[in-house]
Image (tube, rainbow, N blue to C red; front, side, top):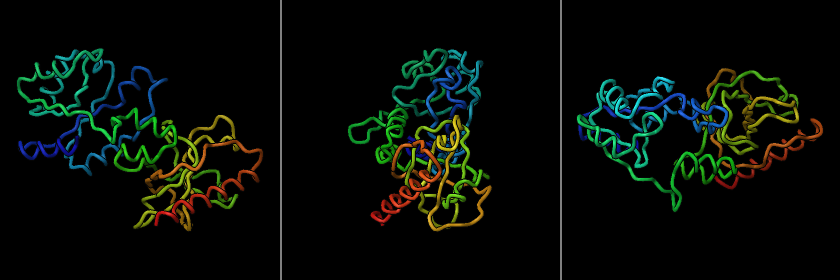
Length: 275
């Protein structure tokens, strides 16, 4: 879709622009049941830029925006604010109060701009969608998620100080706090970018650390192979390549340490078969 946007912008001598919403409408209406985000806003903007998008408009989704009728959305946002000349949407696009606007209504209201609808994208026989990607991640099928995304699923963030437990157990980790609940959990073979000129392999635990304490907040902990440098405050990008196991609670730290050792060995084996 972004490739088609950039192509059309070049043909029409327009600026390739994306309109996105923050928070997601479902986070506004039903925050308790809203699905996990697949990427943070910063990562989304970086991805747009890498695809050739020159400008991004972030519309704050609030009660005022949610109350706009489809016709008001077109007149106030698309025409009045964005001065739209050409727009690309998915064939199932809905907009306006109560999602009352659809593709036919948009085309009927487009007096100053043209509308192009993009058919559903498929990977094999499966329709590419955020729901399909979340389902694959929740099941630990990272290969399927990567196929749908066109790249490995990743989480970015800054390395923060932790309780140094990993170092005391012999496996020092880079701790990346998470602002929101992630769409997956468990222990994974990962690739880490942002530490050196080339990505580094490692093993990551993503979850609430049930062996350490009850009711903990989600945390991403990454043990980078053959690496021991101070990286606090560094922004890293962690690519999830293969799930090793689910998160578990162990009876004591000795049992946890043995399992971490097994996880490291299994992750190293995974990377050794992919050189």
